[in-house]
Image 1 (cartoon, rainbow, N blue to C red):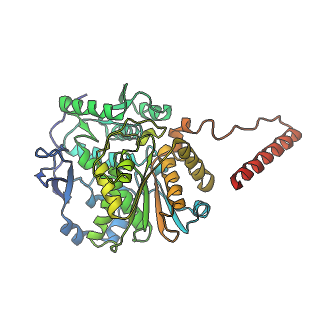
Image 2: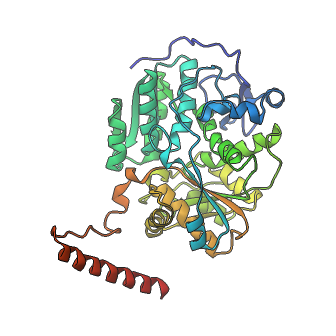
Image 3: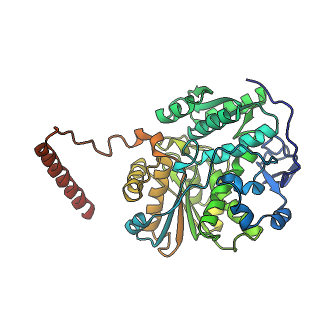
Length: 434
């Protein structure tokens, strides 16, 4: 593992102008820093929106690659040859069967469970972060991860020829561990929760000078989530939805989808429109939902205890900003139990054929809860963000989805098994009706 080397890329093509503190407004050069030196607030990328308004059109975007890099002018990279592994432009599916089950008229699923290359939305943020890391001269990249980010960082670093060392909690799901190891990085399994892993990584970043995608590269990394907003607007025919429902971990994804919509409005690509933002958390790790419910403007950290490990961040960095967005857009932030999360996974699979991981199960369960509470209007165009693939968290549904019917290779054995299956189906429907 090596430290940063001299940058090899100029910034002549960049549309971003630097970094700015979200709290005090202090400005910084576009380097590998993420915290304000004056007030310790988070830093965010600043863009030249006048230049974007003059140069970017719907046509110029549509003529770009079929990936997140069709939106390159809105992303914090200078190069015209970013790391492109086909990430983005995932399906926006009209979920008619799920909509009928819930009593909605226009429901869409933004399905990043099939994102490339590692089947989660993290491929978006990592593609941006590693492109910027390469521009800044890093040859070793790293991350603190609950699983999906480690998968993405290892895979895309491999493609880009960068050394990689990732840090994960030692109790992650087997599919996510295997889905990182296959790419050949150094994997550190830390005996602690994500927040403890993250604290260790901050020390390592300061000591070794590596590019940590969600620490010293975080301002650039987080911008990749904006593409989930851009794509939905484009896929809806250059219009914004009425309501979005998305999972909340650190809160960054939520805030960046909002920022993506606002940027498209600012440069004239879509008409201004009020979009309601609602967030989803697991009850076993719901510090943002608790703050929203109690009317607080601060986040009280919690110790995670939920099957939804990919969103189990007890001290979310962008939690206060997520709460603010939900409030000012007349949205909501709700939490659901682990049992409801499993039911959400099954509901999406049975109605739309999408197998999502626990974060997606959380989001579907919260969608159902909001509809039942009258907090989503039936006439609204609602978009639900599914951020990861269920093959990564199979343990969560084991024991809840039945077993195959084992039969002899004979017709009468099949007929008896079919009769048993139909009887079970009828009993399940009777329970639903009751």
